Image 1 (cartoon, helix red, strand yellow):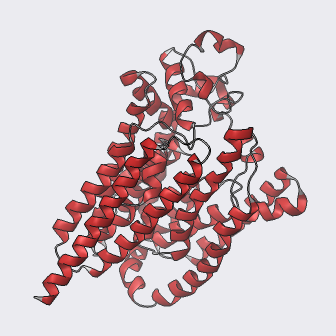
Image 2: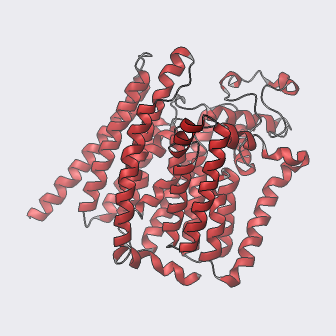
Image 3: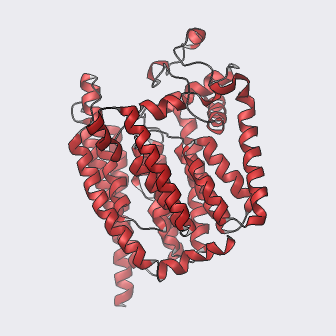
Length: 448
């Protein structure tokens, strides 16, 4: 009887905290104080993260009623996303570039050919979202599969942001379903899917801002599942598709060499290359320009970084600092590959290297690692996925005075606890891998 009462009490607390989170998400529609808008937002999301961490703790203590809990997790996870789907983006305006790219393609124009403010596109600037496009002097950076999705979304509802967010919602649902499949494959408590499903970061970044990373995360999760379940052809399509959404996942390509059987590698790489080629084919008529503004992006852009910020402080040269960071990242990746860790842990370590050495760590970039926290519960990254929202403090001065200036204090709040916790995490993982963690994941090494 006591056990049953205790379980019901935990379930009540879970429902209560989920309901409070929903109220907070709804309240974002009613923030109308321009002076304190972003401060209220940061405080609100910090509260949501606190409730999220409480929920994860509660769920870890419930050892039965999995089906009931799973239904509740999916109900609230979907409800949160639907709640924010019609909220106009106020953290990032990337979604307006998506709409522009989709629109230009419906006019028969290659999106990589011209920047939005190019004279050649003067007659197309009547679109209502034109003035909201970020970096209008640069051609698009988004790869072909992303462009195809922008095209489809625009066909359905023109310049309405809802069509893109509905598309993201569909991919998010499938991401959570595949995560359940991986949990079942590894014989891990299925309620751990809440770590992704209820996490405030993908909820606000995908359904307030509408970032296309939601699709990339889906393909990354699909890649992990298909490698674990030894479905070589689908894993090749999944990885290539992730790269065709955001170029970053290309760093995972060397991992396949170690975790796919040698006899299947020719098949994997053939399908991978054919998928890349077929998606780029409609845009290849402009030659090297098909890379868009990628070269400018990796050389000149930086935001909310850690190691890069330190290097930039001493050198005061962004290009030199970026070059050093990319060299460090390459060396780091080689070292990780030589160590030949467990499959999921290797992907986790690769992403960790990107976040440590990258000159740019926008909050939505961190959504890629959240599915992995289901299997590698890193306290450092749980801290970072919450504290990265503090970086939006920069928008206060930007909206009031049009000054884009990062705060050193905010970075210290983000990264000092992160690196301290990361050291502790890595020491803890090293011990865990000798028993429980090793038992769950090392069977994947048999495919090498």
